[in-house]
Amino acid sequence: MIERKPLSYPRLIWRLGLGWLALPLVFGVVFVAVALSSLAAYRALQRDGVLGQTEVIARNISRSRNSDGDETLTYYLTHSFRPEGYSDSVTTRQSVGRGLYMGTEIGSFLPVTYIWNQPERNTLDPKRDMFGVVFFGLAGGVALLVALGGTAWGWGRVASARRALLHGDVREARVTDIRKLPLRVNGRARYRVTWQDAVGTTGKSLIARPDLALAQNVGDVIVIYVDLRTGRGWWQKQI
Image (cartoon, rainbow, N blue to C red; front, side):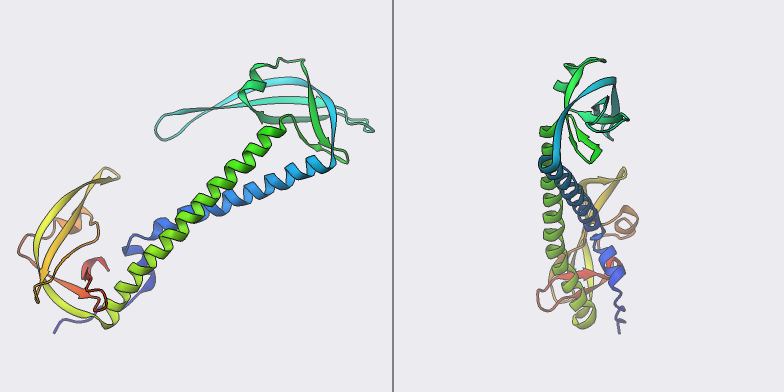
């Protein structure tokens, strides 16, 4: 008699490859939080801001590269102004658009919008600030939608595998093919194992690592769990 495998939710979620859902969820939450914070700052400047003049005292460009080697430039201006009613000057370094940066020299005077009782909260480029709100809001919304859709899709897989483990048929199946996929993870190929079980039903594995897939040969007998509701078979070594 084939022994039934115990159910472990964390192991099941991990083995079904659903850990990636944490990434869009975290990114979505962070991006939406940044968008809301930026929107609050933008509204405060619109509501309580006053217009003044500030002097540019430094210019610099920050360069960064992503994993593909593409370079990103961020333009910064450092400026100083004395708010009305204050004896001390306020100095701020902030990112600006390329057009504003290229059209400004050290010693230039620019309009600055600042909150009258919190002059350290100021901006040279209100339009860019609003662009940041829109960008982070949209990016966060898309990431959360991906996380939501992925969770709904993944829950169906978890539910099927759970039913198979707890109440499904435990069957022997014979491997019919081990197919290399056009997919590599960390430089290593991935595979798909197909089978035909003892009652003649065909099935296929989840995407498998080479150490798992290539340990099998066509004709080998493996153990699968079958979800009786959907007929989906799950390879014991993957769940």
